[in-house]
Length: 288
Image 1 (tube, rainbow, N blue to C red):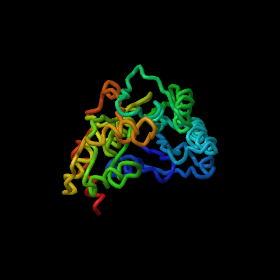
Image 2: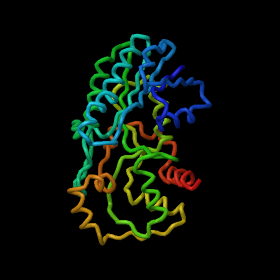
Image 3: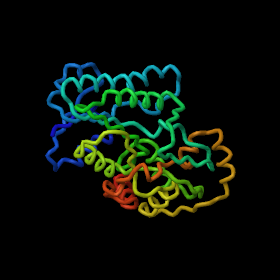
Image 4: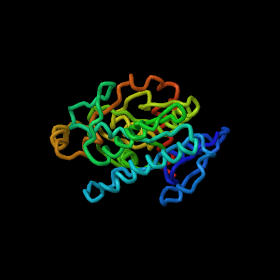
């Protein structure tokens, strides 16, 4: 089976290539930074993984057209081209962001089957509109799998997770706030991708770790493997809760937002790495 991966720099897909190296799956990377993909012969590809996109790099209104061009228009154009060439399955990496931003601390955001997407910025809207247009391409010969990924973490990942590791390694104090998040370890996501591919799945999916975790869980577990002592205090909780109404970054760290487990019925099939082991592996990589 030959799998095409759009782009060259996806953390998830690069890890996926390592993860499946002992299988019979053949991987081809396809450059999408220029229009060269239009000349690529997609007839040799059976499955196409699409991680391309722009995330939270700017909220400047001048960037809006670029978000739509990269997050929506490019994946849809490639999917149409690939469908005509005979590609059988298109796997689109969407995001939990289609449900909007995190709520202020104390306002738990639980996403279930009745929760409608409600993107609050052009990042979320561009992802949602891409989903909608891709699903319209689906027919008996061309299946589309939409993966609304929560926060992905793993060894040498980017984003907010490494900042939590820095806190766990160096900070003497940390707020003791009980929140709950959907997250997924990168190798569990890779196993999930294998299932999607092998079972020729289609539709919308919500992969996550078996267990919800709090920010405190992440920091406390990482601190243990850093052999660093942190004191967790509630003293500043009232101030943090007040500030969370004005500063979204606080909600992203300490807010509660998770997928109801009913959205992830096969979660135990792809959760090969438990939470504590996953944090240990991240710490070992961070220390290198």
